[in-house]
Image: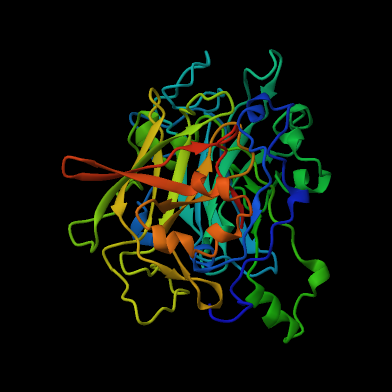
Length: 452
């Protein structure tokens, strides 16, 4: 990252394809949308790297929602296959992308302890799954077609049948959550969440088409749903020198949609109240072999009324104790990779207190753009009901005064009073070192969020 322009940078997000943070027709967004402008951040190692996943992270039935929670029989409803390709904006296949999905059952009810809709729970359907894309960016899973359901936005509002999608590309900046709808559903055009997108072309990319060529005779129908993540500038550079796809054909990023109130089903099912996967992603980033100072990071996410958000999900991405990310694009050869530290985790807020926690190690400084060192920090990504597009922020450490004073990202924030919203205070509780970091979505202490 010593050069002024890195070919691994991710193309800037075009917000014309996405919903705005503040969309009053979707009432929950009113108190959960930042009022200050996002701070535009040129990519550094913290953004062009991201967690790396493998087949070893998944179980054999993770991509089969018909069988992965079947107890005493098969789930009720219309059996379907959902399949497609994940590509970047230049058409390049996104291989080894983690695709996670969650949904309601055929009656329109989620397997979540907070869902009180009167439709019955299906004892043989969990409603979540996950799959890694192959070398061609292809993914496929089986499931039951979800039903629509009413929700408390306006008394007469119904959500169309939909499946939530979470995508983790090969860079932190590519992280995306969206929703897939089914062609021909009359509820789509009436849905306040769909209508947060003021771009008809973008809405159409969220509607899966019936694909009879992939249907299984006498078994199930199939729907095709392709997704696009932002591309790396390296792909643009390569294509401009190889006669490839011209820039005018750059594919728009798939539109974001809120993660909704039941994001835990797909991304943290144990928090939703049931166990389904053999292997789970969680808030503990360390093992007995991880090098570095053990710390706990905890806090709350606060909405515009000062109320803790109790249905939030956060992800963390950080360097190891030496200041190196566990990713092939981090080429700081003078720093060692810690094989016992992935540097990534996810957590949910407690449904009562709103407190979230990570157990990790304190990261070292990372080289930034033009060779300038960035102070030790962790990257955080925040999603919840009412947040239309995932929020990116950073957390720095209060006891790193000298490093913080020269950090290029903190110094990018023109309003010095706002820099303190990114600083976590250190506490010692017995033998535990805790850094407290509350994230404010609005208000006098609104946290700085970044456009990466």
